[in-house]
Length: 442
Image (cartoon, rainbow, N blue to C red; front, side, top):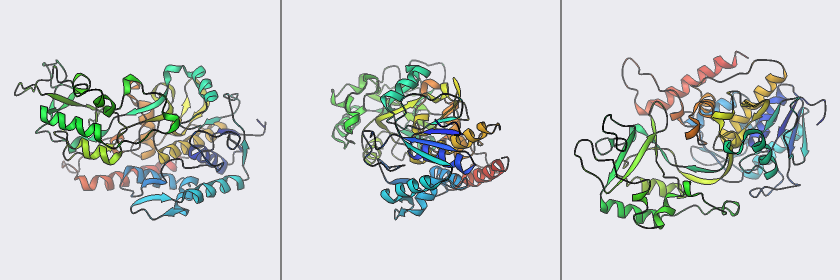
């Protein structure tokens, strides 16, 4: 490390490049480390910075969607990644998709040309000293050496290596004439779970669809193992027709509170947030493709018209238990001055990873300048993600895309419930006004 550096960024992906850009634009001298081309991760193919290894889509660009709002908030911070995406976009309807090569070239050239950024092609195998701010943005496939360094600092129990994510649904789209509230064996209160009952024919049809549904094939580096505690629901179905009835779909203790009927099988929904605006399908982590998830899970009684906030997945992804380890400036509580950004911090998706890089770059700059950390309002997309990372119950924490379920509930207008078609617009207007007020503070 050069003594004249002001901040060090490890990882030249989306989050690392955005963090380096934000710090450099604020006058700091940045050393950006990227191990390619000396060493490649299992997913990367080029030496370009910010290489997109999965889809070329950054999802919806409508400001009335949560991810579209997040993009607009980032544009208002002169995000490098958003500049590149807008400059290299390809037709994709209402989504923002990019030409992969042009996108990564745009970012690589901008980083190389910036007078305050020096790119070092070298693998960093241990956490640097803490004499200047360090931003760790090594991504979901963090190297074994750096993973070991994190384990040594945080403890192995605070680091996960696979996402096992069940689908999350919008509470208002559930059919409450079919779904009933009850916790297993608890007859003294309404219960914390919602229950979708199935008769025998419905159950057998559902199992058949799970077994025969199209799944996402695992990448080579994802093949070694599934953990018994987070098996894909379709893998459990393949083990025998009654496997799920003795697992996550067990009906025992869930008699209908009004009729006393015990269903053949029950799918339980558990609240995802305190507002109970979102529910997850308990035990339904899956490798089914997104279209198949929508088709199959909409056959569940009570979910026929459900709206999915997030679909399920299981994939290789190194991430920390953010609520236990991070403060709301993205610094590790155990080591102030070490910021985590990107998917390693516990978010999911290109845009969300970049957003955490943006905030880490801003706060690392402020730390170096002896200024107070800045935390975005929770009503903004940036703030909602930070709140998810730092305020979720640790035992239930999973990486998440940005969605309106992470935001505080909307207040009624003149005592009336806000119509669904107006919610996105109202949230975005409020968020962008709060963002503007917040930006004026610094």
